[in-house]
Image 1: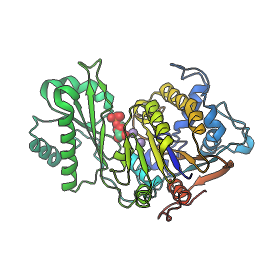
Image 2: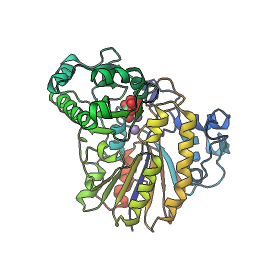
Image 3: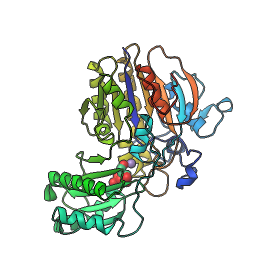
Image 4: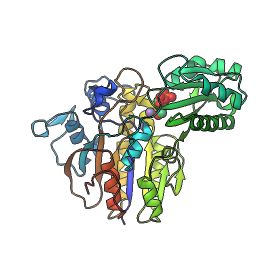
Length: 412
Ligand SMILES: O=P(O)(O)O[C@H]1O[C@H](CO)[C@@H](O)[C@H]1O
Ligand SMILES: [Mn+2]
Ligand SMILES: [Mn+2]
């Protein structure tokens, strides 16, 4: 059996990359700052003490985190209380991003061999933020009384601020971030989920018609009766542009193999190269779905979950203890996955960008990501700093016997 299981820890950066200053992110370190806060007793809500991730440490995560943070493993025996003395069981390294952005599609596509070397369209930090030509075409096309927001915002903050007005007026809430994104929040019941999804499809079509190269339109449905209890639901949908070239996923599909998307993956890759799509809400349900997919996936399969809670629930919310709890919860379940591995299977743990919960603002952070690989019979070793996230995709292509991708160097 040769299968590839990609555990995408959405936003789990492991230290500011050499170009982080270009993004205002010099010194950011999602993993390092979480581990530091835990060791210092500063992340004790719903958990306590040093970060407890023994399985990830055994595989090499602390080793690669220490190296990505600039520490010399020869002279360091722990990383914020995480043990560096044993020899890791996995191949462990860290990868830099060559894509221009620090957004989700750029990171995912680069991992899959298609870096984003062009510039996305970003919206300015002004109010209004979106061009009038876009907003007026959108309101006319779907007969809206207008829009609210039209600014940079954090998604949970803006629904607390404008959700009630939205319910009263029927005007959807439009906002953006440092990502190339148009987000539209609306109430699932008063505005209607289907209506919100149609609105987002319309927004996607208009952006494309107007030549605005925006990475994603995201539908952000929420429920609740007032500002104190609004809650976003699992019915989020992402409308991505097509990747600019065939990704690893498309190559594997074309080879006649299964590509099983779990969670947001199919949306992120604009449904290209996916043979099965399983929806699940929350990291634990995503993990359950991954285990289930592994039970029947044939030789040659890619099983690909995206653990979005790290990013959406904790990174953007700047919730250090929450991020730590989520890491600990996922770590505790890794042995279940390990017992399901068949000879020849390879598991890859990586991320698409950083989102340091100790960093200012609420945006992503430009960081290295883990390049961690393990599986039956594989002997642990240090694979060092990788020049591109594409090294992961190239390793998977090599593992599955596919033709080499245009980017990336295999570590297998
Ligand atoms: O603040 P929320 O709505 O979670 O949005 C965040 O999530 C978006 C997509 O990952 C990012 O662009 C960021 O703005
Ligand atoms: Mn992401
Ligand atoms: Mn994000």
